[in-house]
Image 1 (cartoon, rainbow, N blue to C red):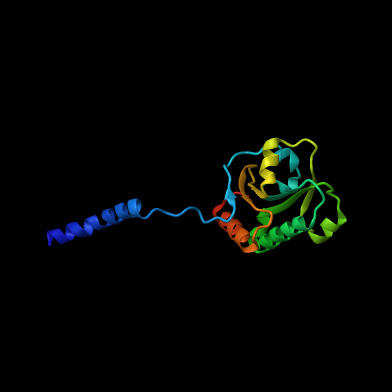
Image 2: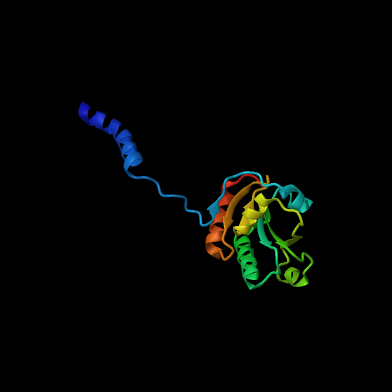
Length: 169
């Protein structure tokens, strides 16, 4: 009887030890590439609009005219944002484009905030934006980057998980 009680008490420790050493957890399940969370320079001055303050920012960078690939990328992020449901108001889509007043861009994407590409941009921000579609948190930190030709459902799954876990923005 004493041996049975000792066995029952030791079972959680033995199973925890076994799981720790023999069943290694797999990597993260995110679709995008997680970046080192650090503040990006120029974010505060570049997106100084009071409407953007305290919101998550999904940023596209198109230094040239918005071609077909750019339009597809903007469509993917619009659909992923729409699929967030009530959480979509916490996320703002921003496009750094050559012509911020392009009427075709405004007509196709009315919820998109178009910002002209600044003449002086830090190399750190430029490298982050060149990787793809960048997510910046409300505090101005880089968080995650997705490829420009991202999958809508996978992008939405990442955003939904992040919005659910986040208490800011």
